[in-house]
Image 1 (cartoon, rainbow, N blue to C red):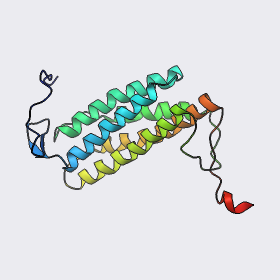
Image 2 (image 1 turned 90 degrees about the vertical axis):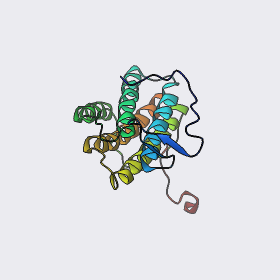
Image 3 (image 1 turned 180 degrees about the vertical axis):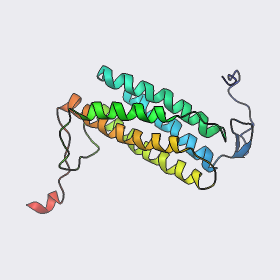
Image 4 (image 1 turned 135 degrees about the vertical axis):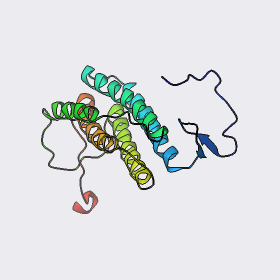
Length: 185
């Protein structure tokens, strides 16, 4: 395990640089920092979802995801380090399949709306998509593992399905998109 922070501020970032996990200093807007910062933001949004009254299966699933995202953030923070394995994505796929099994087939688009937990899960899903875009941008200049890219892609799918489950848990149904609803009068 890496070192623990005993002092929170170091003043080393006051001039626009930050240290990566291997000690390298980069500018704070470096693609690597953007990528792991967005993963950290995603983890915080998942924490906000967990602050609600949720089914136990969702709590267990999302707590596992939070641990995975710490591994993933550490991987991105340390160039050349790999922490996310194919088994992470396989676990997400199993959870996704189990949660999706009882949901009705989608025949309409749904709005990212509903109860508090549902809406927060949709926010997490969109931040996950942004993390995926940031990781893809990073992969153009440096190595990002295929397992990491697959994990984040599958996680956004899982968050979508969890939002569907939570819509039923909170409101009994999803909010369906009504295209051109004002022009149908």
